[in-house]
Length: 167
Length: 273
Image (spheres, chains in turn red, cyan):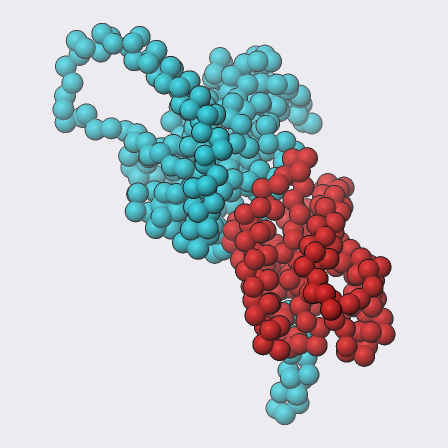
């Protein structure tokens, strides 16, 4: 239990710094930046306190907003993802989630890919909707969301698999 | 009463979600309206400290380029100095009117962004360097933006690459006024709107600041005309301007302090009443 708390605190800080220092300066093809900080929300322990989870997700998003001067865009998207996460968990992992014994360390790769891409696309759609805030630019919105989702999904999967605890 | 408490306890996750999402939404809406001081911004010691540390490492990578920019600027200044000497010497200057109208402070860019609809820069000067909201920011080549939020040591700049910014600008050749906006597509181009159809517009002409506000002095470079189209109403031109500055690689900037700005503002307020 103690181990889980420390690892989550470290993950929070490291992902925040990686996002702000490295990932926001990639600007692939001029405008595509991956938002890897969603890994924190994706990998937060499942059977933990949901209120704490919501507050932590909100704070992470707010800190990212502070660094990016983006108002409340990332805070809004993070809190939506944190609230909607059980849906994605149920959809991707099915019975394992129902029995409350889900550990991200040993799940099969197909389910993990489904889970990560579902969550990331949901998160990015909200980010770009709030950022552009104009329904008449829906094509631009979808284009941006799609391309950076692909980038984020690939990076997130690589990072999750790289730092997976082996047992 | 009991039932209300039960309701709150049963739906506490949903209620917390709605509360936090409401906060985030109001912050977002606030950030989309012009000139409301943002509550969450990168002009504070936490973000400034992190960006400062990163910048102290990153600045070494483009020293060569920055040196070239400095030399270019020095060449221009030297030429102006040599050509102006001997022109003003015979005029006796009354020392009581010799106060400087504009002062300039240099600053370093800690954070730069150019891919969202509203872009902000963070610089390492703040209130203790007497920086205030609505000061203009330029480089040796042209304008960058306007100071938005300030803290003690840091400030954020609302870049001209922003849907919110409208800057008074004019054609250098014919003095026709327009306002500079950005359509969020490319960081190398901005748009000059509301230029009267009676003006002569030529591709390659220079666009400079108009000097109708207290923020920028007259005649600071903005860019060159790349192309122009007639507006949908048919009365005005919309001009595509290729910016002199490369907004993606900014390192050293200058902040313009207009010592007359307070006087101008009170005068304008008097006129409004």
